[in-house]
Amino acid sequence: MCGIVGVISEEQNAGILAYKALKKLDYRGYDSWGIAISNGKGISIYRQVGKIGELPKKMHCGNLAVAHTRWATHGKVCQKNTHPHASLNKNIFLVHNGIVENFQELKSFLKSSGFSFRSDTDTEVIPNLIELYINRGKSLRDATRLALKKIKGSFAVILFAKGHNYMIAAKRDLPLVIGIAERKKFVASDLLAIAKKARGFLFLSDNEIAEIGNEAKFFDIGSGRPKFKRFEHLAVDNLESYKNGNKHYMIKEIKECPIAMKNACIQPIELLDNTTKEIRKAKKIFLIGCGTSYHAALFGAWLFRSIAKKDAVAVLAPDLKSYSKLLGKAALVVALSQSGETADVIDAVRLARRSGAKILSLTNVFNSTLTRHSHIKMMMNAGPEICVASTKNYAAQISLLYLLANACISRRNYAKKEIFIAAKQAQETIRENSRIARAISKKLANSKSAFVIGSEENAFVAFEGALKIKEVSYIHAEGLPAKELKHGTIALVEKGLPVIVICTKSDDFALHSAHEVKSRGAFVIGISTEKNNVFDFFIRVPRGPLSSLLTAIQLQLIAYYLAVERKNDPDKPRNLAKSVTVR
Ligand code: AGP
Image 1 (tube, helix red, strand yellow):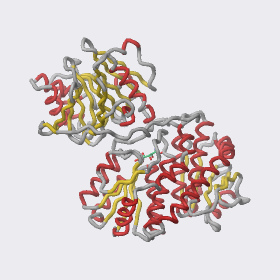
Image 2 (tube, protein in one colour):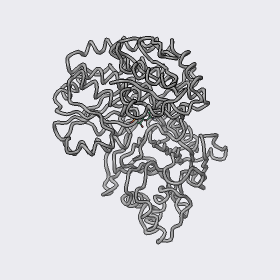
Image 3 (cartoon, protein in one colour):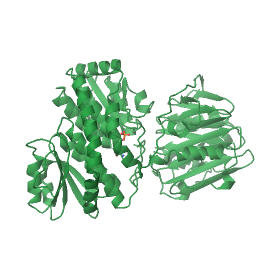
Image 4 (cartoon, helix red, strand yellow):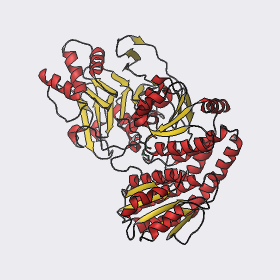
């Protein structure tokens, strides 16, 4: 969740370079930021609560720097808890992503060895443990290795130490990429941070530690043995994203749904054939994900059941363990994740791999941790998704799942044609319906609560629509299957309650529910293929096999305009981070 960066330079510009790289991670969601810079003579630290602001002029000089954006897990959001953290005697300066699960135990141990603490974070035990081992005569590298061996949980760390002209980077389960360029080297938790600066890249593997100075050397954390690794050239040109005249990334990315739908279909033929073969072969298919990706998994499982006639279920990634006895060689686990870094998904995939199940991952981030744990990897090709709330990646996920389900019954070309038709319709409906979506948002802006209902597959779209509304407008919203309403939730319906009804079929059951809530005073908004008198507001979407996806995009639009109407920043919703790398 946190963003971390390290820079070593032959010039005195490491601070500025680290600061600029950190700014590229601004989109991820964070609550505070900080930077430590060494110029060989002294070390300065700057830490701030809130968004990344200006870097003070006095911080501009230095050849070594580490920087951090924090998403609080241990200790409240305040300056003393902001990274970088220093060891007791200010020998080690460190930034950390991850959670030290046994930090209480390590803290007590360090306290009994004479250490005291300045913050409430779990992180602070790491620089202090390193200092302890240095005090006991170990080298910086060995002291870091020993400290990291004591840590339970996932981590990615970058540090430098007083009197040492190099940085150290190490990781377990969380990503770290190293980049080299003329007269400087970078380390970052996200390729995007350094993509434009470096010319050669290398992803650190789990339990590896790197010493990065004039050269970059690699070692195994456990044994200390050296490892040989090679820098590669990567195609990173498409990683950057700009608002292109749009006020927010969210609206820009909603407008990019049509192209994302089409690009999701551009898959290497051999990969598509191989994936189709695996889906056909599987006795049982588990589609897993979290948040929006879970909603796509629900839709995908429905497509696999209804089109491909496969035994497929969607499972929230952390719940896969309750199915562990049902996994095994005959099972296929389809892991969906925009970032490819969601800890709960990666844990579930590890568990599935141990059972012998095949793993197919659908991600949007090249070389993400999830892709490295998968037997088959497909890219969404949605392009960088900067807004914390996922929009175009969801459109790409549904499109690719639809293509795969159809490929299983030899209807690949038919599916592609339908996706291209739907993409064109999506483009038209985004343009035509923006005005009405804005009007609906004005009407709903002061609501305390809203419901989104749909029947069959549209229930999954309703879940996603409600999540989008919650994430960016902060209005409580609940998505539910239309038929479920009368089993309890209808008790909450009262005069003026907004209920968004999704209808995409001629005899759509959701219409009955629309009448039921209307007769109890609800304010009914229909996103539908047909106009109906029961609707107080109406958004039209064309009828077709992907109408449900078109309604999901309209819900994204409503959520966006609600956020704008309520003066929220839709790109960086409070308390949220783009990739959830903590458990
Ligand atoms: C989406 O709008 C959310 N920010 C969130 O639910 C997200 O979908 C979830 O955390 C999973 O992320 P992933 O797709 O990167 O794994």
